[in-house]
Amino acid sequence: MIKKTKAIEQIERHMDGLDQGSLRYEVLACAKQFKTYWIELGRYLCTIWKDKLYKGWGYISFEAYCAKEIGIKHTTASKLLKSYYFLEREEPEFLKPEYVEAHRPNDLPSLEAVNLLRLAKANKKLDESDYRTLRAKALERPHDVSEVREALRSFVDNAVDPEEFHRKRRVTSLRRLVTLLRQVTKEAEFADMLPKSVLNEAARLVEKIEAEIGR
Image (cartoon, rainbow, N blue to C red; front, side, top):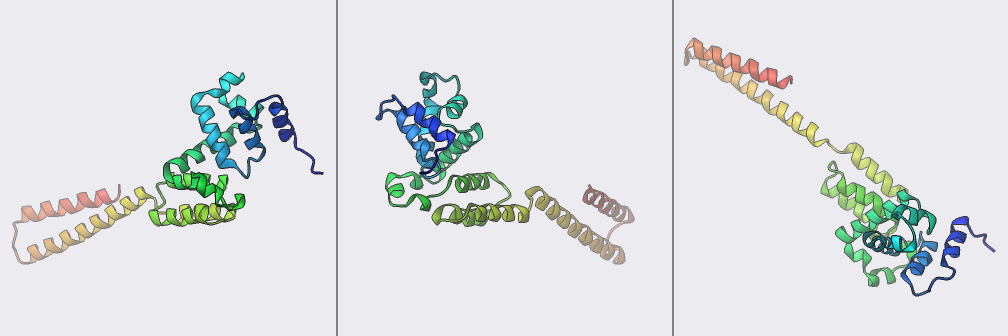
């Protein structure tokens, strides 16, 4: 016989005496199978958080309810809420009952994988191609979470910082401009096309642009 954890024993104590058809009982029953049915638990917790139902059950905060009744830490509860909201907003098809019922629990997207995908979506360094690759790993077929995490880390490490990209492009353009101005100035001076004062102005303009490059 498998020994129950303290968390499971705590949940079962809270279940005693509750109406088995009540929302509170259903949430506790779901929490017992948290790793397998995290999406369902996330759905319940979203309702409890939005409607502040925990107050009617004797808890002063959502965090206290999660910790004391269903044995989930604040960080885990937050991850559940954010990941569920992410699927609701970005990938609602994965929340449809017919999709969940058509897949074995181990074939459903894991909480950790969805949370990593959520973080990737918010990362401005990743392009659309990188995101689609991560999405496939996190949602479309079962993957080890470490594989999704490693892919995300690789994309972030190799991504070009937008500000750095803009700076390099600016410097490259200014250097081209300096080269062009010097060539045109030399040609104008050689052909005696412009007065000395204008050539001096061109030389000063080149110096100013070079100063901008160094900034």
